[in-house]
Image 1 (spheres, rainbow, N blue to C red):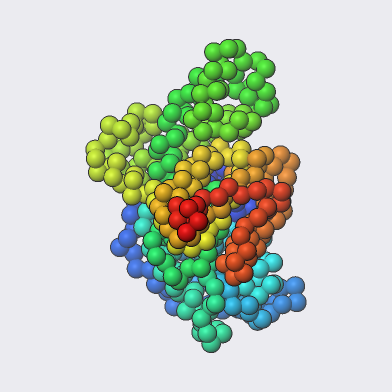
Image 2 (tube, rainbow, N blue to C red; image 1 turned 135 degrees about the horizontal axis):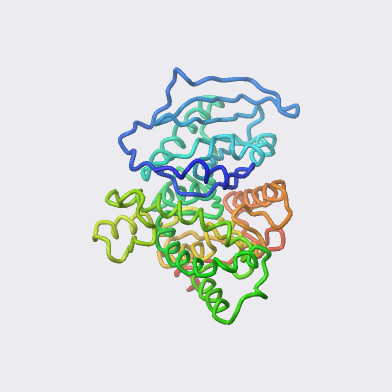
Length: 384
C-alpha cells in the first residue's frame, strides 16, 4: 500500500532526506534478491577530475541501484538506504564527496516490503562481491546508512550478529510500529486545535485560550517537540495517510477507507500485536551506530529515537549507540530558511564520526556543536 501520489508530491522535497512515509504493499519475501545481469551496465565517468566506474542495474523485485567505484579506492564501502518512495540517486549530493575521497558507494531504491531488511542484506552482499571483483580484494570496512524509513530498515537489519557490517549511520528513523503507537493519539488531540491552526502556522500560541493550551501541553507530553507548532497544521494529512498505510501494511484485515482513528491497536487480535512487536527494533546492536535526529521532527518524533536508545541499553550488547539531537532542526535535518547543503554537511559529519569510531576507536564527540547522548551497555556502565 503506497501513500497517495498527491500526498507524496506534497511531502517530497528536492533532497534525499526525506520523504519519510511508510511504505506499502505487503510482504515480498518470495521475491528473489538477485541482480538481473541483463540489466547490469557499467560506465566510466570522470567526476571533478576523478575517474569512477559506475554500475547500474536492477536488484531483487525490480529495484534500481547504483554502485560507484573510484579509481583510487580507500578500502571502504558505504551502502545507503533512502526513505520511503526514495530512489538510488536520492543521496547523490551527500555521496559525491565520499566518491572523491575514495570510498566505494552504493544505494538502491526503497522497498515497500516488510521483508526489506533481508533484501538489503542480500544487496550488501552483492555490492561487496562487485567491489571485490573490481579491486581484487574485499572491503576493509562496510558501513550502512539509512534515512527515515530506510533508517528503520537498517535498524532491523542490524539486530543480532552481523559481522559483515562494521558500523551504521541512522538518520531520523521512521517506523510503522511507532506510527501505530503514536499517530492516533496525536491526531485525536490535534483535531481539537483545528480552529486555531492559523495561529499555529505562525508558530505562535498567543491566540489560544486556557483549554487549548492544555491540548498543546498534552501533545507535547505525547511526544511532539515544543516549538514545532508551525509544522502541526501541515502534518495532519501526512499522519492520516501514513497511519492508514501502516495499518493496512501490518493488519491485512484493516478495511480500506475506514477511519484511521477507528483502529485501536490495543483491541486488535494478538497476532497483530505480535506483528507490531516484531517490527520494533530490539536494539541488539553488534556494531557502533550513530543516530542523527532533528529536535523539531514531527514525522519521526525524537521520542522514538529515545525509546530506541533505551532498548539498546536494555539489550546489553557489547557495543554502543550515540544519538545526536539537533534542537532546532526538522525531519530533513534542516533549520528555518536552510538549504539542503546544511543537511548534507551534517550527514557528512555523521559519516566522519562513525568512521572515526570504527576505524580509530575515537568515541563520538560534538557534531557541529551538538553533544551526543550515550546509550552504552550495562557492562560498560558498570566499568566492566
